[in-house]
Image (cartoon, rainbow, N blue to C red; front, side, top):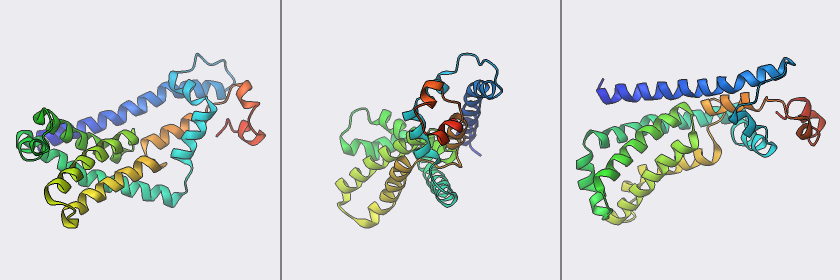
Length: 218
């Protein structure tokens, strides 16, 4: 295993630990509220999620699908992430060669810098998709690099389906994940499921239907 792959694994593990730590910081407020004790001042994430519009948006984007849909999104995330990550590794292995071969032909400024950006976007974006952590950012990172790749292929080879097919599949899959979300089987889904259990303030709970207010708006 190369040093780069070890660093990638460490980065993915660190991101997952940070997500769990951030969730734990906010969970203490939820546990105190449920026990009837006076909770401390809520964390910033809990405060944001207490807004009905944000709560409803999280439920629809991350929690509003069935088991089969969540399983399908998991398969799509992992498949795109595992297959895309080696493209980023190849770019980072020799960024100068990628800059000379691809970026320079697009006449973009700072080709070496953009080569590093493309490689890191694909590696980091792949990890975010695999973990389902900050999934929209990961999907945007991959969609951005694939959009530029599609433009490069059209510029150099025209509308050649055999050249474009792989790029279009990655681009379409990442855009689909951006619009659909990662599903429940993800760090984003687990965090959202915990956060939406936070009890609503009385003024907000009174404006909701009885069934929603009783469940904390979840």
